[in-house]
Amino acid sequence: MADPTRASPVATAALVRGVVSATRSEPGESTAALAALLAEADVAAAEVEELLASVQEAQQLTARLRRRATELEALFSTARELVRLQDVTDVLRRLVERAHELMGTDVTYLSEVDDAQGDLRVRYSVGTVTPEFRDLLVPAGYGLASLVANSREPVWVRQYARMADAPHDASIDAAVEREGLVSFLGVPLAVGDEVLGALFACNRFAHDFTPDQVLLLSAFADHAAAVLHSARVLADSATARARAEQAYRELHRHLEATQVASSIHEQLTAAVMSGATVVDLVSTLSDRLGRRVWALDDAARPLGASAGPVRGLPARMLLTGAVRESQRSGHAATIDHDGGRWLVVAILGADRVLGAIVAERGGEDPPDDDVVRPTLERAAHVAALVSFKRDAASALRAERRARALLAVIEGETARNEADLRAEFSAEITACAVVDVQGREGALTAAADAVGDDGIVAVRGEYLIVAWGVPEATDETERMRRVLADRLRQPDIRAVVAVAEGTSLRAAVDRATRDLRLLVPLGITDATVRSDAFAPYHVLTSAAPDAVARFVDEVLGRVREWDSRRGTALVETLAAYFDGGGSRQAAAASLRVHKNTVQQRLERIWTLLEGDWDDAEYRFRVQAAVRLENLRVRLIAGR
Image (cartoon, rainbow, N blue to C red; front, top):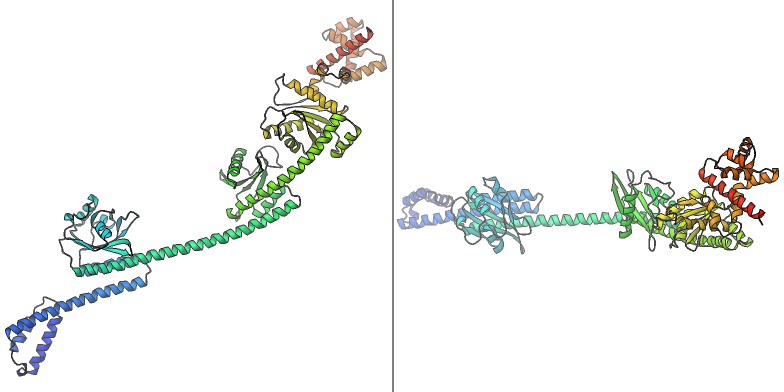
């Protein structure tokens, strides 16, 4: 090597600048200028070659350092975005774009685990040309993705079509072919033991991926995994926070509902202690809940309402079904019908439904179901206590009054009558005998139906009712229908007898005999008046004065007229009936003028109280006349 000291300072400086400049150049760039400088400096050829080799090596190292600096800058940039993680989609998209730029491949894409089976779906891609590849779903166990996910290691293939390490899927192969991809490098997105997806770099030509490329893509994959994991953690945290907040709101609402329900329950309990009825309870509920509330009886009919549908309530069939559902579940049942909504809670006794409470949907700002449902259910318990209290008091009162009634029927003593007046101050106008065949619960049901209008007692298989109302027949029929419904016994029969002017015991006995006649007559479900059997009482009665009473009831005023005036009106009636209703025949039989018979008949019609055009009444008059004539003849023949 020539002695550099012999070179000029200028030449030496130029040589140094040339060497430094050459080492900073990109690999492969020409080194001819440096070689010329070295020749001018009289450097030996062998040394020139060695120096040029060193310069080229320095060029490659410098280029690698530059590339690593760029890669590190990209990775640091991604890391900074990860720290400031706001939009996961934007971070992952830019991460894939940077990986694509640095890898220098034709296509770069990120696939994320799509479901519990481990299927991978392409989420972000750069360089793709077919739309179906941008949303490609790779089933678990197929293709290069399965190798990456199962091995949790980077995997690359020079030619995908010839890959034999994993099964191929026809649809996946077709998508790869349409995209024109040949070589693949895939690295896993893993956190701990979980694989979240995979990052792929692909070329449209056969290519052997270098370790530097594998490391670079793996670094981006680690960042992508961190992004996905952070997003999931944040999502889980947000979900947990939202659930906690929702739970707190639910707890707060539940506590408020409990406080409101407890307040209403205390008010209902206080009302019960002061003697409130079920109707009073539902009135309180309606005021506190801001909606209409009804009380139903055990047959799903509104308490205190007249017969027929009630405005605002669903049909009785729907109510009955909802009461049965509430009875089974022990909670409020819902009726949604024709745009309306109601809550129904059964009032339960020990072995039966006592009734129900029904509340409609509220107004503009009503309490929600968290308040209404528990309130109605608690109110049903309170109503059950009210019903028990009422039933117990009613049962004691009914039993006491029944004893007094039976004592009068069986004894007829002055003391018994005084006891009955103490229990029932109204005047007894009629009695009814009802055939309930000794059914259990008949006395309580009948007492509820009768109320303060009468007294009920059980006598053998019959119910005896002493009425203090003017329309006893109508009231008895109403009570009979209630019994038929509650006892599930449609064939209930009843007979009503007037008790005025005769003893209560006699009226009950007469009605009882009449009730027995209904069976052979085929009458199974009706209420009839005892008066309808008047002509037949004398045929069935064993009482010694039965005939005399019957005749006197029908002909009493006519007989009295004959007795005071010395006329023969009863005799004229007998002749009239014997003559088939002919005035001429009656006149001939009596040996009087026809006009005399006409005058006597007109007087008779004014004295009789019935309707002469009524065939049944004429039959009774005729029967009474014949019995009277029989009595007179028998007396005359003694």
